[in-house]
Amino acid sequence: MVAVTAVVFAALGAAYAQSTDVPRNEIEVRGNLTVPTGDADFSGTTTSNNTIDFKRDFDFDNKLGFEVRFIHRSENQKHKFVVSYGRDNWDQQRTLTRSITFRGETYVANASADLGITLRKFRAGYAYRWGNEKIRFGPAVDLGFITTSAKLTGTTNNGIRTTEGSITAFVGTVGYDLEAHPIPKVTIFHTLGGIVFQGDEVFNTEGGVKVFPARHFGLVGGYKFQSVKLGGDNDNFIRVRQHGPFFGGVVRF
Image (tube, rainbow, N blue to C red):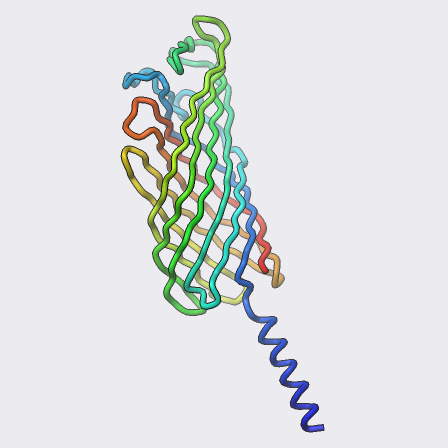
């Protein structure tokens, strides 16, 4: 009986230890409710009159985008890997208060125009973190592709026209990664990264909370800010800044 009791308690202890072990992989699906500001110029010149100002000329509203992430942490929690894809797009119709040249077409003042902005991101990141089971902090880097595009439809000197400018760049950022676990079912996180290289500029930061009411399922929410300027030192460029809350679900295993 003593031997059997010892085996039972040993088995229960092993099962309990396994059940309290935190899963090291996560799949996260987010909705981003953001509003864009920034500007774009595809006139081929440096004339500021042909630069579209997203706030002044179109005054965009909040729109819902999405992001999907896969996160893997090593057994000792020192190494964190992230692969993500996100897409945000906004569309706004306004009456132009001035004439604008875009891709060789002059869109006339006092006529209705529609501007669509798209921002797509695919990145892979790595962070090396020091700390303990309560908090982890360390440097982080990521590499990936970012695509920005602006599509303008409206009345020109040649009638109704639709023109589009798009820029894709391979960029990387350097920053830090922070995760804290005040209690086992709650994770507080904050990340920051940025770089300026040959005229391209990328900066992003976000902070939030993950809550896990069940072992394998959780909720995530927080706030993010991102600024992307692509086009280098050329006359044609797109700059998109976005900020707003995000929310979603997490599956971990």
